[in-house]
Image (tube, rainbow, N blue to C red; front, side, top):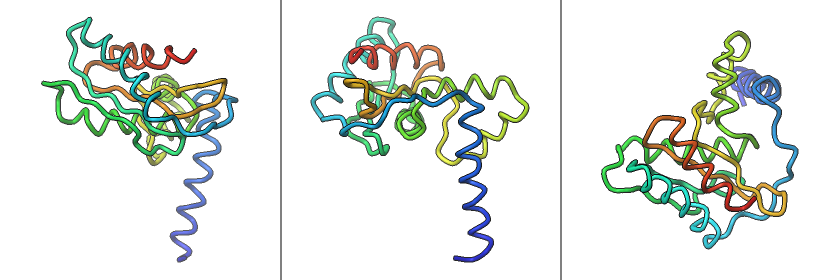
Length: 163
């Protein structure tokens, strides 16, 4: 490994350790076994139902704790860019043990929190929420397609299923 690469890796590690604490405290919950396909579909269903109820078009992604895609569904007429954004929101929520809204709120405060923009793999926009089963993070849901607030409303509907 070159010294340039080593320095970059060290900086990324420092950002990962420092910034999340400033963004919002991570969930104290431990990671659990990865969410099953059956439970992933169950989490997506209320999110999709919330979108249908409001006449919104969204994409929904469910990932395991490592950020690997378990389930995905995109409604007809959803903007194409939302396909990847929904997965990225879910990955952010799972891997950083907090909702993507925490990053969005931290950025709104500016200052030191602007460093969040340098964290690889972080989507600082509402719509990604960790999924808990028996108090353990089993994955996360990510929703994209509408405004961040509307995306989060749908994601919350899915995440609330397991509360």
